[in-house]
Length: 236
Image 1 (cartoon, rainbow, N blue to C red):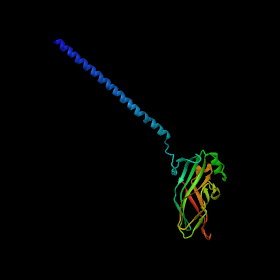
Image 2: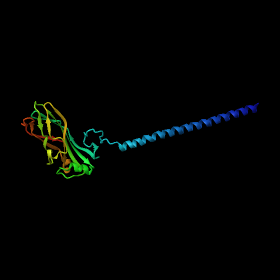
Image 3: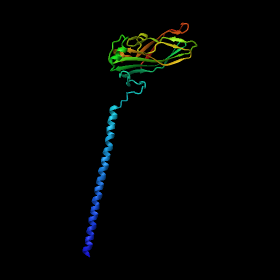
């Protein structure tokens, strides 16, 4: 009887040992699986962070949004040239030229880097300034409102002069925009602009420009409505 009891006890002990080994093996296997899953999840996160850091540039402005802070840049869709905003001032300066109200919205100086020869040939074809890489342009954005009862003719800005003694004959050296306008009574022309080329050696030291407006005429009689005026604009 004692032998029988002893054999049963040995059998029970063997069964418990086997179950314990099986549970430990399963636990170890589960731990390894969790660890592997954790490493798998970490890997793509680290990789995606590396890609994000290498491709994100806070100064790059896309989707045609206007550059608004010095240091921002975009890429010219036509030539692939890098366009960097060097200086900007937004005076929203208003001036009455007779019954014509002129508002200077903003003035921007751009650096254009890596321009192809085709672009340089186009820009410098009528310029006294020799081509360079990079080269620099100045843009003046403005609006015109005719508050009178007659149509008015305005030939834009005659001259742009920098405090570095560069004089630009705007009507002869205009690279973009429209310098000549006929404004009907009650009309408001917004987001008009002119673009001219600057001497590269003077750009960093430009702190002020002076714009000289043209004479304003009555379109029908061609009588003078307002004389030309000088407008001083500071870069802050």
